[in-house]
Length: 150
Length: 489
Image (tube, rainbow over all chains, first blue to last red; front, side, top):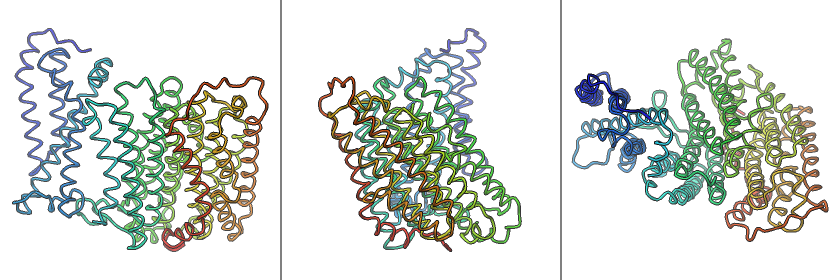
């Protein structure tokens, strides 16, 4: 069980830093198309932001309440990934061959671009949620149980 | 569309596994029906795939369209397709059996339990299809991690067994990875078919031999070959009743398949026969395993532990078959692998049913059954015939071809080992039947009511399959000889 941190300095700084961390995570995620970055790194940074918010505001803070329900989203990230792959297969190509991504009205180049962005978003979601769920399961067992039962 | 079948086979259980936590969030009882439906679909697709491979030749599937040495390749040849039918059928039966025997106190974690089973099946599919050494490692690890978690689900002593399996299994995986890195350092490639072209010029390198030995020891731990078998009996005995059949029938057998791939497909048959005498080592260890496993089984009192040691001795027999270096022995080994997987599944279904329906764990308790259990006794007799290797069953024909192969290559010690292990198998089944038919002092006060349909279905299908594999052994072995032979053997 993680309690909110009682130092006002950390709480105030947290309010500033967490949005910046998350925007930087999104930037790294989307910049992965053109340079260093991508789904895994972006996901790690997003996950760090969430972990920071849990550490500062605690499990019970209304701000991080959504994080408990979102623990199921590791399946969602993988589903986005697999769904893009499946759309490629429906389009007649191999799994994850973005050139055959079955979205009408797009050039091959933009299909490739869109395909890779979508899969990277899936990967990022997955990595972020996994990082948070590791922290949750290390910190308090009963909360894991409740979130799964609920 | 047919060229997509190998990818579909892998993605079906994977898709189902990852969507399970989301789909079953509100209705956790759906998880069982979804698993059964997905694995039933997988059985159909795997049969389609086998049909397709037999008639149109092997399929090489490259993910995301990057071609072979760079991309990730899936190789669906005859051998892989045959084994995949086995994996999906036994996975399906295992999940059907799980329905009435899954641990009761799981609560909401039941969803994760089915997720892990499906993940295990998809990882096994990955090992069977993988066309490069590194992906093979990845799927070995996914399968192993799922099995650790599934064994540990029961809690108590199972946790200890699972932890021991985890330590040894991780050691095995690391040794395998070390071997892969040796080969990668020498050849500069991980793709199996690419490595085939490069290896013949590099045989003087000690790294190649070292890499092969490391991979053999690593996979030897995974397949519970005799000096490395100590994790298996504990793990399978203490695992939940519903999990043991899937693990016992599939995980070790698929590790053998991975070894077959490396020794006969990555290395050529002529290399392992003439230049690097690894087949001799495999044959010697197989001989030891066949005899020692049978001997240890004789000393066991617990049903599941007895069957686990029986499985260890049969791993040895399969390895004797495939290490003879001729077609007859190889076909016999692979055919015996199919049989052994079915028999192990059947035996652990039986042990699970004996515990769940009659509360029996040990051989001595069997006597208390009396005449109340036609299903258990009948299927036990069929499986005993198969394990011992008496004629109408597949076990007989498997051993027959293995012995023919060993005679062909003049390896009389192996012949003696197969016969000796047959005698030992006979001995421990005689012990079992002696306990079963002994007039007991205390009858079991049979409470039980009807046997659940899932028990009847799984026991019936596996018992029938043991006989059917025997009756149709000639066409199946012919199919293996025509479509599943390694190049150059």
